[in-house]
Length: 224
Image 1 (tube, one colour):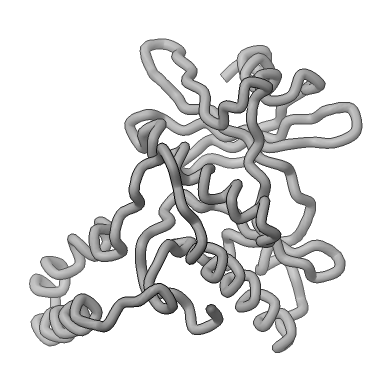
Image 2 (cartoon, helix red, strand yellow; image 1 turned 135 degrees about the vertical axis):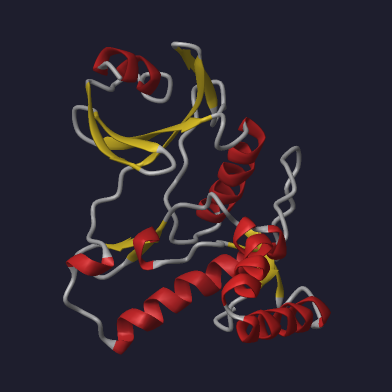
């Protein structure tokens, strides 16, 4: 995609944008946008992958967490207060969103795997979960239950085809999960993809969490 086009998108979120650099592509295309003294992230999402409502729900939750002190990346908004913009090109539609750019290192780029780091990670997840108990979304889509994820929906048939023993264990696991007691302390909105690839550390080992795309209603972490 031409830089002039990307820059025009970026200026919706910050008029000071001067250049754009491609970073990575997986489910989304991610770009770093440079301003004179800072940078931010531009994200393009194909409408075939997610709806605008799903993205707005993600960003609404993430903004709530950031505003309440969680160690998460801040979603950006336009001057009119929008966090998700449509963009059409060559017959395709994309949803455009933006976030603060945070300098730091991923898990594999670091050498410090001390117990203190694991505690830092656990505390960050715990705070997200504690704050989620008070999250009262208005005007956004309800997030799916953990059991509605396609991985769980398809797992049973895969286990049944390859290993009947695993299939029986999977069925029992799902039965136990579905019948387990659920209350506000152990069940609620979670990150849903809390992997080492979805948080970074700065030089002081402070953590920042991102990628809230697949947040789901599920059992909360013991760190809550």
